[in-house]
Image (cartoon, rainbow, N blue to C red; front, side, top):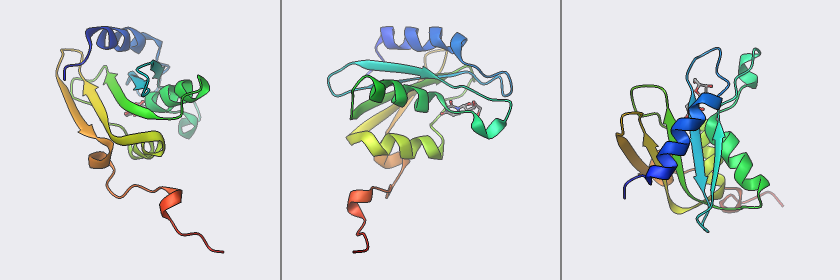
Length: 135
Ligand code: THU
């Protein structure tokens, strides 16, 4: 499956909105809900560096804020020449809401793309409902 051109165009346009004065790495992400709606976000850095957050986190926040509770697919793009894959923390954030087989699709400005399922990117990911709790 190719990346829908409208999604690729929107992601590339959103790179301008990233707040990344420190790393200069602009990232945009889209979360696709099972009903096909798309929710977008960009990375937001902070002078107190650890307080910044990733584009995927922004997009997940937008999806959840819009009432969505599941993720069918994630798209990511950046201003870097190589494919960017979600960081470890964002893999866990995606895993929390991912439908089984949820794809993460990453694309470059020049149109190359790659894809992996979230299970490939985060094997044995943590889910509370699979973890026995103490009585
Ligand atoms: N970043 C993202 O927003 N998503 C990724 O998948 C990888 C990294 C951001 C975090 C930081 O603002 C910048 O890219 C450089 O690490």
